Image 1 (cartoon, rainbow, N blue to C red):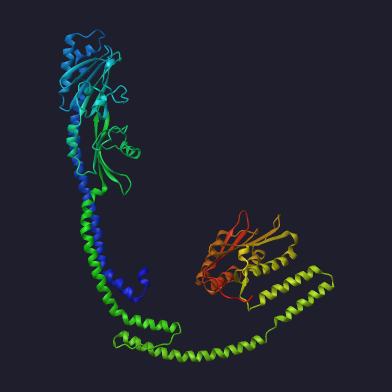
Image 2: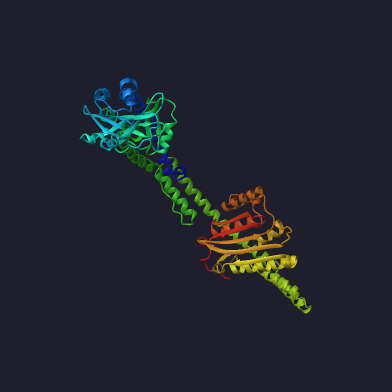
Length: 606
């Protein structure tokens, strides 16, 4: 609403532009918001369907291959061979070869089948339809480190050469993942070896590529409990764990499928997930789609709308300026004439040829100014008469020199009666009266203000004796600064009038001054009573009203309100009076005076 606080031309332009551009802007914002919501719902629906089909295919594919690691238990002949400690016979080799070939043919993606028999210290490697038999001591098959426990696991994607058999048979290196199952005798439950199946990524990569629509989308298969990534379309991600926040978000999922938004607002992504039961564990198929790509089409539409909107805005601005200038020019000229009169400049009547309401207003204004000029002359003559009357009244008032002479006589009498303390008090009183009654000086240096405050405290010390202690500690670099007169003593007087209370340690007053940046800070502290929260709040409200000259007459008092009012006059409303309680008791009053707004650059007689 600040725009409506300017001139009439500005208001007129704002109203015209608002009426023309606001409906268009609102329509554009609503369209943009609805488009974002629509495109997001479409992307979510599309990816959920895609993930469901992918989950079905992958589940069937992995279940079919994973069943091969349980063949040793379903083939009684092979199981009998594995549980015997006697040396192997030739016909047993044929049985093992046929058995491993049956597993090898489960999928074209199987590269190696590995069977280990610890009772005979023998390892069987089947790859490229060839069986290789080696001693366990010389077995080149190195399973990547993975704690499989006693159950079947899937080892994350790794190089086939790192697991050995391809290397031993001269096969090329390629990326594979491994089904692994430790074998135990039944019912003895003794470890007799393990079986592993290496599977290349051709089918997974082919099916996954159909799931990815852009380079910024990701797809991975991970163990829901451990967070280990088995396969990923992002190079180097397989074998690692999900980040802690992401793993925590996915681990707590109860629904078999769905989506969630993950990450910070700027870099957030929508995670679509499907769960599958595989090898007695829950696995997650997760597709990550950046939110920015979801709204890419919407942003393209916005890229078309926005330039059109800007062109329309420029056209509307030009038309509005021309229309508003035509209607507001006479009003602005008339306002300028009013300002000239306000600042005392000679008035030149404005002549307008318009015969409408604005022309009538101008003619009326010219006539009014002529009437005002006549009234000003009469008012000036009346003020001259009043000043003469006031001067005669002032001359009839009591001459302050009479009081000074009386005090000097009393001081002389005190010395004659050998009463030095009384003489000191009379002298202090004389100095205070001269200071307070000198109406020719409204501004004074800070050191003289502190001297006046000290004279006041000398009087109070005569009253309270040694129980009253005070410290006046003005900073040396502030003593020559010019401030309004009578700003320290009223604060101290408030202590004796309103905050005074008996203390075992006596009564203390501390006054100091310092420079803080472009401000002069004067602080007065005492050990009197605290103010209640209600009293402090009421005082702050009155001080605030005084700073803005927004209060009525009854809000102005003598004390702090009076000080605030006078400071406003001298510092152009850039001075503050702050009041705060001290712990455990006492009060602090601070005067913060702006040196930029003060009178320190003006000459003063003092």
